[in-house]
Every structure is written in structure tokens, then in C-alpha cells.
Length: 340
Image (cartoon, rainbow, N blue to C red):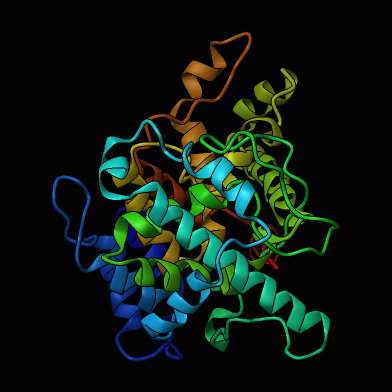
């Protein structure tokens, strides 16, 4: 029995999931989404929207945000967009800088409007309903609701130059790294509206803390990467820590962007298929898996500098589902809760 088989059979089926969704998740993990050589699929964006539980969006809703013009974050956005995935020819050929700028600017307006509404008591913070069968650890099939984060101290590949976060720990808006996080949505989508709908749902319902100025959740995630590595590979963990290489030094971009900062992009899409199906919190295990894949190189270096390039999604996922079975319940719960 493979690691993936064990992952799928670890616990009882999720009977509270909508009809067909459990099978969809299994297909995503076992068979993958059919793609061409560029990693493209007409089905992917629709599957992502289903897995993210994103409601249909009218084109006019997106256009109204675009028509508002430059948001307060526009200068920071423009300082980042031209740097986004500059070494990826597939992305540059399919996604224009103007398209990325429009989506991010519309997101900035949407986040600001929602934040002002909450501050003024007009609405409650967004939450993503989780079936009772998912609100535990018994079978690893979790879909976390939200994430928090704290000041960006590292730079995300392709985003150098913009300010990190907003004013104050509770501020909400555009933060450095959102351009890289938005990139796969635009690459996978067939229109800006689809990309906006999926991206907006993801950051407001799955990880709203990633667009807060404090970025507390990212730092919690980095601490968990250190804990997970110490559990699954004590020798490698000891070696890295002995050289002063904590996760906050080398893994900040990978946590913040769900590994979207690591090329090639088609491999990122495969990884995201899995993360959207079973929960973005599993990205922490994916990062540890990438470390273990290069452990010999790291152990043989007196000055180890983890380099995750190129991303090998299938190998990463095999390690990830194996690690998931080894994580104690309390640590796994922290993985889920760090994103709230």
C-alpha cells in the first residue's frame, strides 16, 4: 500500500461533505487534473472554485471594483507586478502585467471595503463553514478557515521593493507577496473574473491573515516547520539549527505564497490542486518534504542554504502524505489553527 493509499484510508469517509466532493478530492489526489504539456487545463479553475466553495461572481461586480481606479495600495502593487515570476516564460506569455495589476487593485479595494465595514460594525469577519466531520484530525481531510500573519522580514521572490503589510497589526490590504500568490490563479483561469473570484475567496475565507499587516500566522507557520522537521528528520533539523538556519530564514516565501515562489509554475499548480482539496495547512508539510528531498546536500554542507528549485510536486506530495500520518494530534491541530 502506497503512502497516498494510507493517507486516504487513515480515517473514516467524510459523510458530511456535499455529494461528490469527497470523490472529487480523491480523484485530484490519486489521478490529478488532466493537463497539457504546459500544465494547463480548462477544468482546473472550475475545480478550484468548487474546492474553495467560491460562489458565482457577476462580471459587473469585478468591473465595478476596477472602475474605482487606483486604490491606496496602487503604488505598492505597481512596484511588485513587473517583478512577478519574471523568470517563468509560461507565466509571462499567458498573464500580462496589466491583468495582474487590475486583479490586485480590485482585491485591495475589496479588502479595504470589507475592513471598513467590520471596523464600523456593519459585518462580521468572513468565515468558511467546516463540516463537523472535518473539524478534527481523525482523517486529515481538513479545510481550514482563516490565517493570521506578522511583518514581512524576508523578501518573496519577485516582490522585492514593496512595503510589507499595512499600518498596524490589524490593518487589511495589499501586502508584499500577494502578487506571487495571485499569479497561479491568473495563469489557471480563463478570465480575470474567474481569477479574482478564486483569489478573493481564498484570501478572505482560507487565509485572511495573509493580508493583515501583522503576519502572525506566517510566523506561526514557520515555527511549525521547525517543529515538524525536528519530528520527521531529527538529524537534518539538528544540522540546520546548528548552522543557524531556522525556517524563518529560508522558508518565509514558501509559507506566505504556498510555494508559488518556487518554479516551475506547472508543478505549483499540481501542488495547489492537492492543497485546495485537503487544506492549505498541509503546505507546511510540503515545505518540510522539499527539505528532506535535498537532505544529503544540506547535511554535507558546512553552510547549508536550502534551495527548493525546481519544485517536484509528485515527490513532494508523496512525502507530504507520509508525514501527515506521523504528526501527533496536538501538533496537527496547531497546523490547522495557526492559520486562524
